[in-house]
Length: 243
Image 1: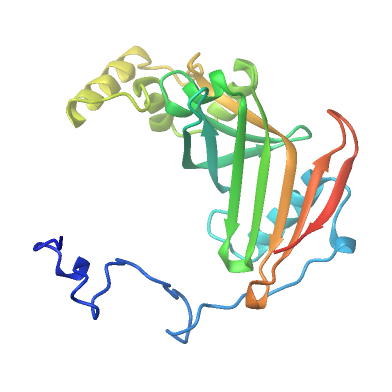
Image 2: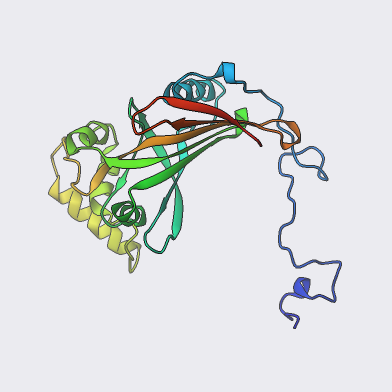
């Protein structure tokens, strides 16, 4: 049965197919063809033995190429036992010898519930200006309050107050409720320059087990290399993947 409110969905109207979006070609100079990636190539000999060192080099190259906020990353988690997956865009704030660190609320947010029952996560970085993507999969671990305090102190006061005030992802009856919470926290820390990191807020490190580096190529014949751990703390194995 056709939908009278949506004539495009009618099988009797072939000139207006039911697809709301079909084969978009954003950024292409030819509206009939998808954009081609031709900025670079990637060979095994280009890669560092460590994916963390390789990521650091690519991140520096992204900064040099003026990639907008290259620290932007999609963090994906999954709940168990239902297997429901959720993803959100966050900022990577640290890279250390163990992995990638993001900061957030680890009490009320959905990602907090996910990692409590399933301590694994995935990260995806996309740097359009250099046509590169990095994917990370691994286990997660919380930073200590002392470690989180170091980063927390770099945030503007409003962001530190906001971390205390927001029960992230909980339902609000209105914006006014959040603003009242902010006022309460501002009063609590009035006159204090040093605000302690909330016990429910802090850093989460994704310790990588798999890292993939992706360089866009023409005709979708991309260069892909995957690092995988050989054992829990073993050496990294690097493999080229088919696009």
